[in-house]
Length: 138
Length: 191
Image (cartoon, rainbow over all chains, first blue to last red):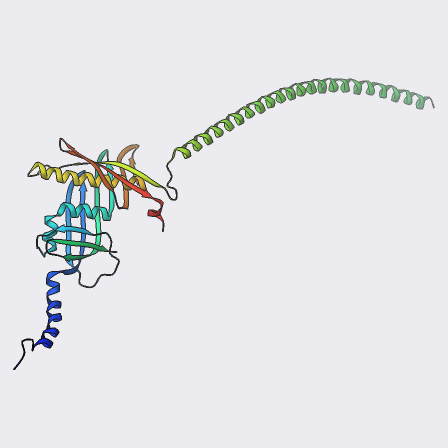
């Protein structure tokens, strides 16, 4: 007759596998490529674009200052960023943007274009239960 | 013998007459040369006076030039003393104001504010880049038949701005103004 803990060895072997399978569900991490650009023409916002995509290969670089965004269980980064766009854009500004400005005055008529760009940067993103941690890798 | 004596007398008389003529000619020449020498002397003294005057004037201009040079050097020294230079182990604050306006077709005042603020931030970034890195300026004028056909002036700025802080934002009558500040240090530019 088998004892109550007759499957002890089996359970011991299975538990780590189950934990390994469940761990990414509880805390999943991924690398994303994010770029951002906006154009201001004659002191008026003309175009704004934020591109987010999964990284196809592993990124190299050291983690920099991180950002915590409230996610409310959401696992789609685009949706999380859309919910917290103001904080995310402020954070991007802090990271540093390339400024390209050109101004042309022809026959006393002036027109100007300013382009602010965040060059495509790899971010490590950790999804937790209620918040998301975003860390740029440089 | 008689003829020879007569001939000798004639010769002597002739020689005497010739000598008289030569003497007369010599005196006039001497008088003329004396007058010329006097005139030349007068001219020389005049020229000397003119040269002295010119020398004095050139000395005056040299002194004025030296004065202007000294003044310019003093101005440059004061400008250098006043100019802010980024030194090692010291930081520098740069403050700018960016302006932006909302587009005409906004659906709400909040959207207008958000878009105007974005434009103002971009303008402030441009102003910081201009202050730190400078501006490239190109100008072109086209003139045909002594008349201006076209006048073009282009300016360019390119920079990377990091860690700029918004100090104050105001939105009044469709115009958004953003006061922005950046602290730069020598280490930011070290290679």
